[in-house]
Image 1 (cartoon, rainbow, N blue to C red):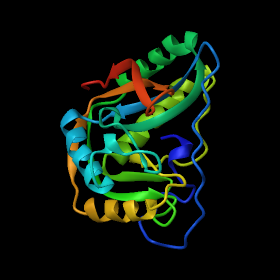
Image 2: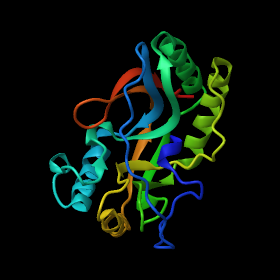
Image 3: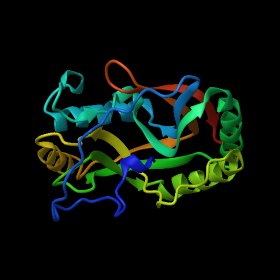
Amino acid sequence: MSSSDRSESGPERSFGRPRSGRSFVRPQDDPPGTSRLFIAVPVAEEIRVAVGKLMEEVAGGPIAERGPGQPRWVRVDDLHLTLRFLGATPDERQAEIAAALTTAAAQTVPFRVVLSGGGAFPNAYAPRVLWIGIAEGSEDLGAMVQRLNGELAPLGWAAETRPFTPHLTLARADGVAGADERARVLIDAARDLRLSWRADRIILYKTLVGRGPVHYESLAEARLSNG
């Protein structure tokens, strides 16, 4: 996951001491010839459908109809578990990054991921990010990150210093009025949630920023080894 998706103190499910939120600033367009890249595990289609229904329950209606002043919900088709954020990257380097994905994936067998429970970063009083937790698969995801780190370090991407805390981002709510209520609804709605699928690939994504919601384009895919 990217550093913008997590708090230094990790997931916060309780309603502890409030912290001040930060206003949302849309990223500027990347320099010509570069793309903002990240690596992630895609969420299976049937799980995306189920999570999409939960998101609409939390949002109080169709997320596509949420306007200004509302949490910025991730598009259901784009739901993913972030492994590594690479930032603005020269386009000519995409091929070597894709090769690193293939090598790392060949060292990893498919594994089960179970989504369960909801929360907010940094806390539910002043949430910046709304998320669903990982009940099973965290160790496998962490091992995948370590393999990616090993392949990316020689290319110039040092491992992140913050601990890896896997989660499924649903929305960003920086400075949104009433976001604390959405966080509490999410925590209640996801309390008994349990959704699972078999993760069998990783994808290099490009973030597309412009008119309308941020969305992502798949640039390269690497299948996990069957052992």
